[in-house]
Image 1 (cartoon, helix red, strand yellow):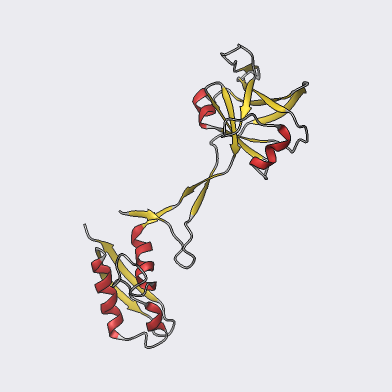
Image 2 (tube, rainbow, N blue to C red; image 1 turned 120 degrees about the vertical axis):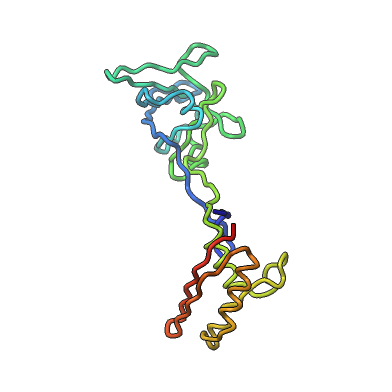
Length: 217
């Protein structure tokens, strides 16, 4: 089965799917110093170091303090005991928080990163990198269905790489939908795109077209 990047034919927009971290962790501010605010993330001990590296999700309410951030991570075991994940650089429990440009982050500027106050923390090389919790991937779809839509809606000349390709279904909808040449055109265009048309059914009353096709192997 072939797959393509999903595209909205009418708008030309790429279709995106929202991706969030696998785990959410609890967060709280625990103390304030002269230059730093100190935060604490807590989670069940089944979250491993590689999960922290891949990123965990956290909700942080807006804070107006213009101070840099230090973050600690605490694992809670089955007996509800909490253990800090120590920073090997200085053997403390705190890590410096930076943005993706490797600049230290101020608490009051966090909403610039996420206006929904939902963040992703990645613990990488003894630094915490913060970004918007919601990231997006290009959506994929079965190429067969998408190609059918493109071929039916396209006019010859729409696709500059293939200037003769296109069924121009709209022209038939404005005229005689039962025109026998439509079925022939559909089969020709689909076959050229390596799709074998087994059956084409046209409902003259509703204008609906049902195409049964499969990819040539």
